[in-house]
Image 1 (cartoon, rainbow, N blue to C red):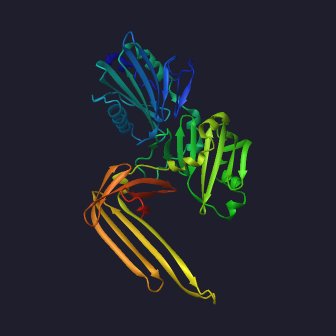
Image 2 (cartoon, helix red, strand yellow):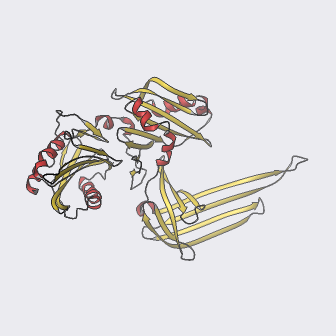
Length: 431
């Protein structure tokens, strides 16, 4: 059955509009009629099972990830992630040469595998372009479904609403190799130039990087951040709700400036400790917004997390902090002294497995402060994208839970001692 299946591969960019279009993430398409639809955070799939013939077919469209800008590399990465890891297809794929059209390159591969004791075939089609990679996986054990797969692939097109929206046009990954995180709640996060882009089905959320909450922005907070961060992309046509008190919030009907597409926009500004963190959600309609978010926009701020790799760790990371207290005579109101605490932490990860740590500090009354310094060398290992281990001064293993937080033009490396969670480090790259 492999030969007929290979005949239709890479017909991706043809356009047909005879069937009802659906969209998922960056693609639109016409799924087979009356097939069962299933959606999770990472993909949407359509399936058909024939019990009498003991045949099946599944077509799954996967959420986009950051492209390596090389279609062969993207295909290899997606084949290993989807076909090998998720579907346990161990055979090497027969790969068709890449084709290119409209700024996208497409490559497809086919391999046989066993499904419940029967011969089956898996076909992975990978599209790479515009700094994104999208994958479509088709699985079947019958040639009867070849026309359905072929017809589906022929309807695949860009989701114009997503692709032409300038709010997601940024390509900055902040130097993070694992620049897309898929969360258990279905959201996927990717760093952009000015914000973290979260996508889920037909919804998107922008977590704008922190800005100073100063006198200028305090005067008319909602108007300031709406104009400063978002109005160049959207025009608010009808305000539905607004709050200018302690809760800075606005939502309403809007139009995308670039395309004229109508949508529903909500903005929530969290001002705390002199910093403003803005969350903006874009939904197809007010009803869908209320169903999806239920006034919980600020809960998405925790989705600024990205996995750690040894490559990204390489180099020096540092943090510093300090505080002081001044003392005054109760009767004369004259200054009588001050106490202070100053700390400096530094971690160095080499390109191999070498590791260094340096801790310096001083504490006590100003003019008579006690200093300390500790420096040791050891090794480190990346246990997973969310955990690393190092050796300490006694050559004992210390495990840290870790992640990158994207910030404007960089990242913060967060480390939490897995055993003693009160020991934390928030580090930036040392100059």
